[in-house]
Image 1 (cartoon, rainbow, N blue to C red):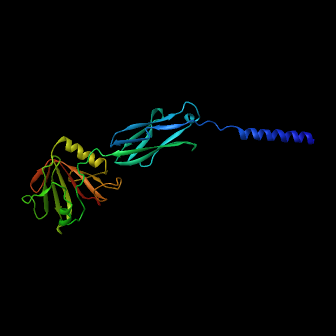
Image 2 (image 1 turned 90 degrees about the vertical axis):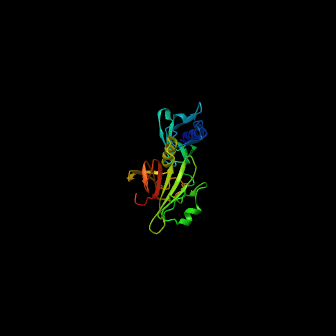
Image 3 (image 1 turned 120 degrees about the vertical axis):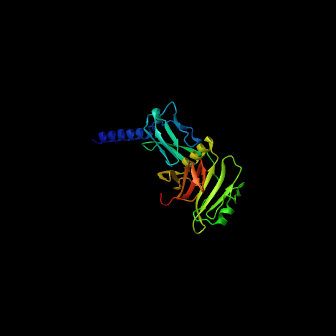
Length: 254
């Protein structure tokens, strides 16, 4: 009996040794193409997972995920590719991971603006006339003939923004800003892009103007949180009709 027991023990030890020495299955390698990419708002593209010829990696199940869906969302499409939709300017990390947690790869996506048409335009609800003057865009001068007690008008020879009309409340504090654009198809498209790639569409209109709102998606927004911006057409201000522009105001109630 002792001999049999010894033989069984020896066989068990040899079996355990063989198991411990067995190699883990070769995972192979995975990479993402591209692993980083700079795009503009609305420029949809695919990320392709690239597998080595051998290994278990290509046989696993994977998921795609974005660190910031509000900036760049992703979904799996045919062939296991990840389809990226840039939604707002900023940066997002795309993660491609196996469901068993053994493989994780990332790609950095940067969304650049297509439009800068309103860059530098100053608006702060309740700002004083002094603050407005101190933050005036370069190239703009007061238009005293067009200004009134409640409207401060500044004009320029720019091919994009022709006038800035600041509307004051009864306390002479800033209530709204009308950015008057030269009426061209390019300026209209640029203004539409500027709003869509930075702000949230509220789906709400006032006076026929559909408003977007700064909800904090984009860190570099030049207007305060809760500010509302809307593209207008053929708006009459102080008996003058303006065919194209953007109204900026406090959006707390939107």
